[in-house]
Length: 194
Image 1 (cartoon, rainbow, N blue to C red):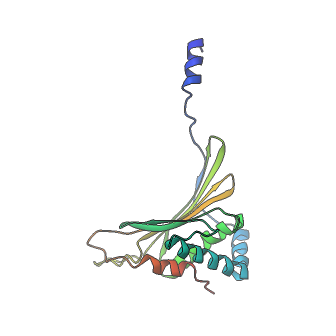
Image 2 (image 1 turned 135 degrees about the vertical axis):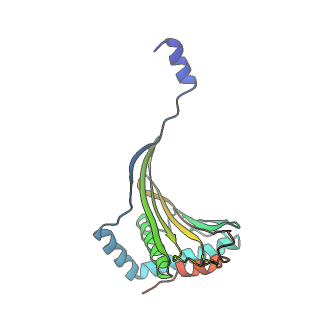
Image 3 (image 1 turned 180 degrees about the horizontal axis):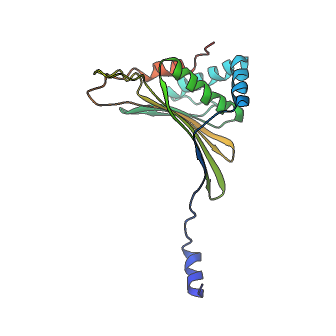
């Protein structure tokens, strides 16, 4: 490499590309299922769900809470994200992801996909665990879209939770019925089912 090339590379460094380390279907181990069952049966899960539910409603009224919540509201999609905070253990985020999935499945949704993608980006490793859920299949219009398609995403930076995001995207096509109220879905997500 010539001296000139070295100077150009120092002034205009090449962008480092993200390297995909893993891209696979998200499958939980038996140990992870057992850990979830223990977490779900404990009083801790009820306390955590109540805290986040409270933080969600406080955020809706622009009141801050120790649990940081970000809201997304539009005509086509509604959702929220729970950022990492000291009020929750790192392990709680995976438990919440599984809890929200089970709650959505309990109202008749079907799992359409799951993915676990790990990428190396500059100075950190980013893991994205995602479930994609759809309403029951129906052929005759108007098709009942319920709350729309629901995606559940957990983003980890270097194995530590960055945020957990829940998003419901609705269809605007005339073949579909009007979507149900997102706040009803939120109520369902935070129920402590048996």
